[in-house]
Amino acid sequence: MADRATPGGWSLARRVALRAVLAAVLVLGAILTVLVLELQDVRDDLDDQSLQAQARQIMRFLDMTGVVTGRPVFAPPPAVAALYGDPAGNQAFALVDGTGRLVLGSAGIDGPLADLGDMPAATAPGDPPGLPDLGIPFRTITDGGRSLTGASFAVMLGDRAMMLQVGQGPDHPDVLADSLIEEFLETAAWWVVGAFTVLIAVTLWTIRDGLAPLRRLSARAARIGPATSGVRLADGLKPADLPREVAPLVEAIDRALDRLDGALDHQRSFIADAAHELRTPIAALRARVEATLPADQARLLAPDFDRLARLAGQLLRLAEVDTLAIGADERADLAAIGRDVLADLAPLAVQRGRSLALDGAARPVTVRGRAEPLARLLRNLVENGLAHCPAGGTVTVRVQAPAHGAGAELLVEDDGPGIPQDRRDRIFERFWRADRRRGDGAGLGLAIVQRIADAHGAGVSVGDGPAGGACFRLRFPPVDRPVSTGRADGGPA
Image 1 (tube, rainbow, N blue to C red):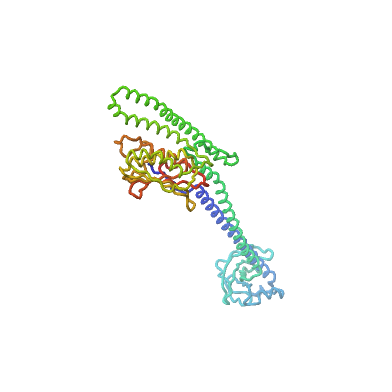
Image 2 (cartoon, rainbow, N blue to C red):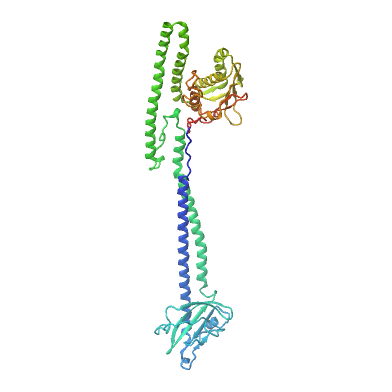
């Protein structure tokens, strides 16, 4: 029996879900990165505007009359003076000449706030006079331990080029804007993450729900077997039940099943017709031989005619059980079947010097099934046991009632040599015989057993019996459980 190929890769749902999640995470990361960068630009612009406003304010209240004498005067109103009069305040400025000497500064400032570097050229007087649009940014810590963020502006005071350095601490008047930006970043980030989490969850649910028709179709396809070959994937489905992309595949599979059913019907019809047509010529040939040949020679040919008749009968029964279908409301009593079969085979057992035993048939044991094919199944197993049981041996049939949610069981045990482990996977194949030198069988009896068991949803297996012989075990499903017919691997259950 060939090994079944098992899928080794990921499922389609997992692949699509993983790619969707990765795409969502990448998009989320890109959005958050762009958002943070944009808001940082906004905060930097606000800082620049705040520093520019601070520089314009200082320039507005500078008294130019003292420039000629060498030192201008900063004369702001009391409210503005309070901002620069505290050495530990959050605003500071320094007016530095071209040599790096402090000309004027706020309280606590005794030198430039930052290195001058190359002083840029001052712009033409404007509003306020001589203040350019952008300054040179810097960060510094003053001697008093204040952390300042500031900018240096090249200005013209009279005819002198100077550097106006303004700085603001972490609690400057525009800190509200920074707080709003930070709050927005924190809040918006969580909202964005939450929204993408919901998006991912909806995407995963959509994928699972979208693939649900495929799972249902797979379950329906798994139930299609020899006994239910007329079932089609599209039976009972509306066009809206199938995705548009899947409908052509379902239609193609159903057409392939139609073609397979046609081929199987032709094969079954051929086997049944051949078996039926063989019976009459075999019987006629046997009668003619017995009438023509002497009695002793006719007796020598009798086993050959018996084997031919048996083969024709088994072929006919095999064709019948290949199309066997069990209805949902059909019931059979294993105990009654066991009593009837053993009563019919008792003369054969006595003729061969063997014994038959029945255990567990005192009360009815009901299974979902049909009595006639189950009787044929049990008859084949008992005949197989009688054929391999030594003289004086016993073939025992055990009927076990359902227990603990499991179905009923039927066991057939014998005292024969048993079946080697390496042959147990092949004994249910058609025309397979362990010893082809024996001429008393065609290798179809156990194949018929397998087909009948499949039609009833029963798993059939072979193991070692209590006395060392073979033990065939059939496990029937519970009566209230739907029967699953057909096997995917084609081997014994």
